[in-house]
Figure 1 (spheres, rainbow, N blue to C red):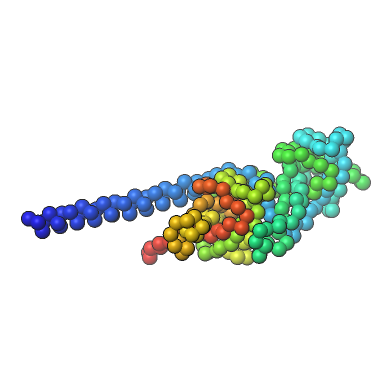
Figure 2: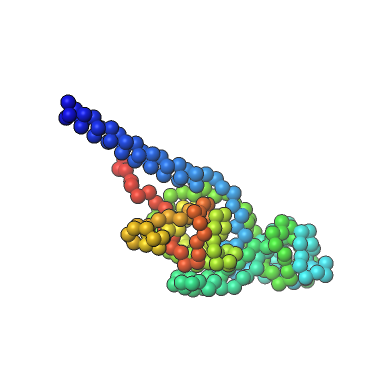
Length: 259
């Protein structure tokens, strides 16, 4: 009788363990599914190294320092433009001075201010109208080929194991949280792809818990803009804020099954 009771108790204990593991796996699947749905993201900032503007706003009809929606402007184009052509208005915010500069040399922060459409082309001038302004536009702001600042992203599992650091936040406030953009010191040449899912992590010792070998995820990101050397990422979710210098890695499944 004692032996039967012991066997029964062990069986129940085993079921409890299996149940806990199953629930843990379901929670992990649910977490990944929540961040894999289509998300509309505004990308008003991006990082680049060698961006070549195609034009510049040189004057405006309205004599005001800051230009806004429907203002008519004069632009200087590097190459001929046609009526109806659209361009993105950007501002160079300067080089990123990262707390950990390795891999960030040459990185520059740019802000998308709005868009313009060419309305008239003269022999010595080009006239355009400003629209969809997200921030004040000024004379001297530069133009690049049209690039939308709203895009639909779907986080996916990356193909490669990649690690790097967060160089800076888009707003340059020193802290980065949910639904904000950040700049990373890894790009396409390192194996990153658009929509790759990333995690910001800390070692257990940094949180005061356990061994330094344990990596604790604190935020989930998705790559929304990519250059050869750098990436812009959007924070899908975060347990708290993180800072420039934080480490990230591609969010890949730890267990893989053979087909």
